[in-house]
Length: 69
Image (cartoon, rainbow, N blue to C red; front, top):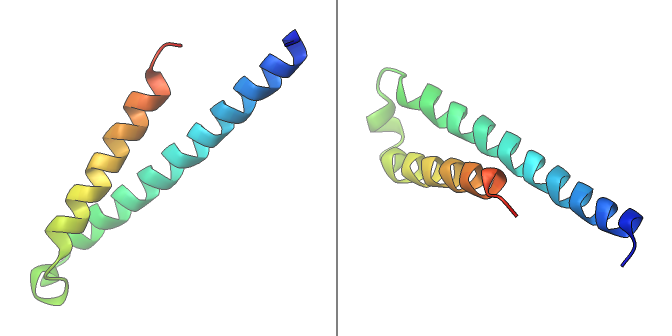
């Protein structure tokens, strides 16, 4: 495999991770905002479960993105 092909493959992986990370941050921020609203527990009874999943997703994306290869 040539250097150019390897660079392009690594660049695609980096771009994929950056998109995943940005989407995870936006989703986490949205759940954090909704959770701080008055009456959010009554309107969104499943909020803690989805917020927990968004937090786990954010942490996994950070771990995957900062892992050495």
